[in-house]
Length: 149
Length: 149
Image (cartoon, rainbow over all chains, first blue to last red; front, side, top):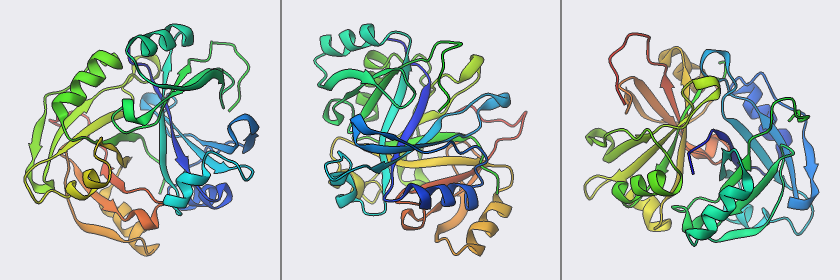
């Protein structure tokens, strides 16, 4: 596989409302998207844009807050009550090809390929096989595709 | 302050050599810089480039390995033996102005402003004041400046 864009870094937070205020008032973010629920993952999500070079889009901050009592984030926030860095997400051109490559390398993939927060297929790879980092692999949105987050 | 580029994410590793092999062979990175020692911080450093949009430079991965017995990374790796996400680094146009703003907000800055891995002034802000994330603030390298990492 060829390394793709670092689409976003996933940042766990006990309160997206508080984190929005932090990124707006302390860090000076100007492009903060509308939060939405991603029920399948048990999280509420809010993307914050960072600028890339020469007016391009940079890597996003994906704020994630637990949604419901059985959220996968509950354990993370129990250990890190203030929140913190939760995962990294890299883009690939073809999700099925990437999955096959990771499987061939013996990397533990967490669950099925599913639709992620940007509306394209994603899967997660176990942190123990990825240098200690929970890693999301995401198919690059196609040009003209309808995704607004 | 206005949110600048996410220059890099700092990734702690027990072995930069092993991490280089991982990013090259598993993740498909093609631009991996030469590792070097940053003695003042007690770390060995290696930057891995990720692509940005439209051929621009994306956010880098900054691999950091402990250098010497008193490295600040020792505690992190004791808790996270495989390594993991260690800090985020955002660019600002003027480091002194940014420092004054963080101080005015009562954010705890860790030590003096100093020269970072990219040869420009940086400082770190305490994770407890930054949503649980150790945050590096870095002055954007000026065009034409001599920095190769």
